[in-house]
Amino acid sequence: MSYEEILGRTDVNDLDAILAITNTDVNEVIHAVRDNADAIFTWDYERSRPQLGRLYEKAKTSQWNGEVDLDWSQDVDQEKLAREMGQITTPDPNLLPNFADSPLAKWGEKEWVQHGIESQNWMLSQFMHGEQGALVCTAKIVETVPWIDAKYYASTQVMDEARHVEVFAKYLDTKLSGHYPINAHLKMLLDDIIADSRWDMTYLGMQIMVEGLALAAFGMMQQVTPEPLLKQLLRYVMSDEARHVAFGVLSLQEYYQELSEPELKERQEFAFEAAVRMRDRFLQQEVWERMGVAPKDAIHALKMPGAKPEDDLFQQLLFAKIVPNCKKLGLLDANNGWLRERFTEMQVIQFEDFVDTSDEYASLDEVAKDRELA
Ligand SMILES: [Fe+2]
Ligand SMILES: [Fe+2]
Image (cartoon, rainbow, N blue to C red; front, top):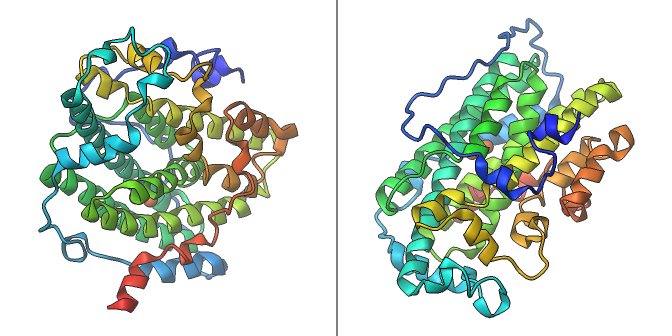
């Protein structure tokens, strides 16, 4: 398939085409997508997949309760937080040749703080929507995966995801200052994942791509935020996410061994599409719009000299989990390295030998660590 067929545009980095995709129904409350799949019973109850069994046991003992395990009594001063984060993230205009002629040049501290606040609201809102995507996708996996061990494990993930939606929604409602509707790129990706009839595509889209990115993004945010409640919330969510990504890697590793090169090509194309959609959403176009600045003007103003969209270090780091996991699944090198070439173009191939996530979940289990300390 061509880029046009996979992405709807011929140039991956065509900024106008990316920004032309917007959420046109921001008041929508119910969103229906046909999921095109049979619910599968299996009469084979034999526990033949010990790695999934271990994951299931771990999940049963590492459940936590957002209502009691997080201290919601602490106040969050969002403005102070935006100022502190702004010191790390606000660009230095002297390094940006297009800045002086842009609408951002007129911004004072007030606007930058407001931008920081909107950014937080946006980021946490997108996390929350993504978590609901995981909830729905994983419930679908319970129905569609033909292996009993995978049905058992997936059921624990459904509970985890309900908890994640719950805590992000509560944090937004009680500590921040407003929701954002789902970003159009994220929505398009979630729709594509849930609409695919093949059970392994749900795993690839959700457990490998969306959750792999979430694990990296939560890790970065957890390290930089000075806000203790968010830090704690993210530590616990990440403990679960590490298991979820492991679930994807362990399941697909087995299944992909049976697939032919043309079948693997479809998986590579899907992984590439997902990677691009997720990168596109981080342009935060809705935040610029709410601040009254055309996204294109803001992106142009903040561009480093000679930089291409794929040069952004933050965006590259988001792929630190996805690329090694795709390698472990054989997706980088199937079909003469088709996905390796795509990830090279996106400048994320350097992560291929980072630790994959098939057993990292044991070391990321912060819930167990806290319980031991207590
Ligand atoms: Fe989650
Ligand atoms: Fe998850």
